[in-house]
Image 1 (cartoon, helix red, strand yellow):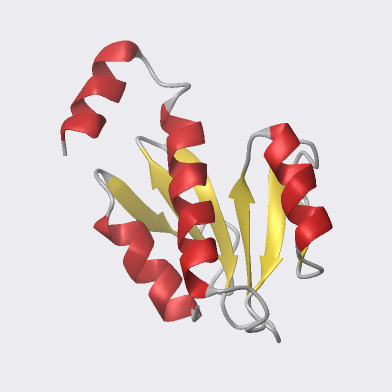
Image 2 (cartoon, rainbow, N blue to C red):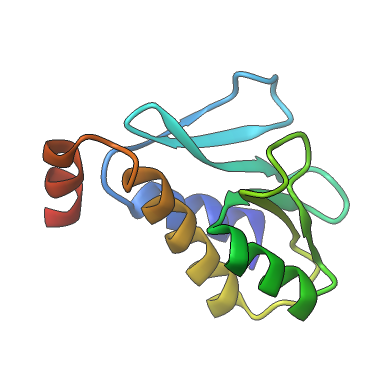
Length: 118
């Protein structure tokens, strides 16, 4: 998956915004003001940091060398994924979806229900 495909996947989700609070080199995708993707598309290789349920985070790290504990984030809850072509695009898409749903699970019930209707 390319950085452009990550951005497109993120922006297709309900109520997602793209920001650059850390400068022009880092793209941050938020749902209702909460971060679910931190992307460094200009890194070589490009990378994304995604929220993840803790046991799944460990499983993904064991399964893919390109998945490591989250860079500059809570390493129990976040994974950094190198977009180096070693992980199938559909698996990365699943990780993006999982990150989005991990974040909206912590939002108020009315907000969750509104987002899930989209």
